[in-house]
Length: 368
Image 1 (cartoon, rainbow, N blue to C red):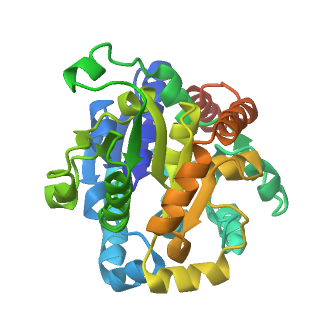
Image 2: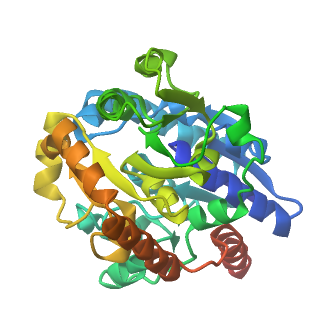
């Protein structure tokens, strides 16, 4: 079989790479091309476009780069047609992938979607477009199955690939010694996109300045310009470590995390956290009128209640971060968060999402 995968961000690259490995295990003749990242390439796919070339987040930011995004859509469609795949597998990245699904549907190209875009958060009517343009949907959050039922769609819940990634991780035995660290430090995860890091890292570093007696580890990513991390250089209680998030979380005593996949990863490592998020004023203004959710972090969404403190936009500032962090570190709250993480693990289960998705993809293709 020939597979074409499309991921538009760092987490999608990770999950796509694991899916590629699973596809190759059960289909020895698999030919795979992709738009994604180096992890998908290392897993055996031919990388035609890196996600960093098209990474845009926020409603206003997308509008400003609309013509660029449209040109990427045309280029991606052309790459797919030239490759002639048996199936195109879209991975999250809803703004781009849903537009692409419509184009591919017109060409009678099979479209499977792994990791549903978060349409249940806002503009849920897009489920009708998914029903029309997507042949199969593989969901990674348990409540998404019931959501799609409301739109007469039968989808497959396959487990969560973040669980797979964490379970497959083997901590480095020399991590602490190599970086001259002691366990129990505070992890700062400012995100993987330039906009996120630029807005949230300076605020996180202010917190580090307040707790000068504590050690803070910043989880950096190498695909961003080095200058976004310049604030780490002169602080004596801050250490910047690149591309070792899971090792960092293994030994962390607490964390401040930018909303996204990292909140769930932090929860699965059972590290108490405060979740922070800031976007552009216009994006927030529009989004706050469209999004109808009580929670925005993955851990709280999965649990269906507040397990960790969330700080959003104007409520995300130095004072609220300090207050929330101090509250979190009180023994009663600290252990309450850890108990909440156990509930989340139970809800998600431990089925290998990548293997199950690969198996279902091949079954559906063979049935056609």
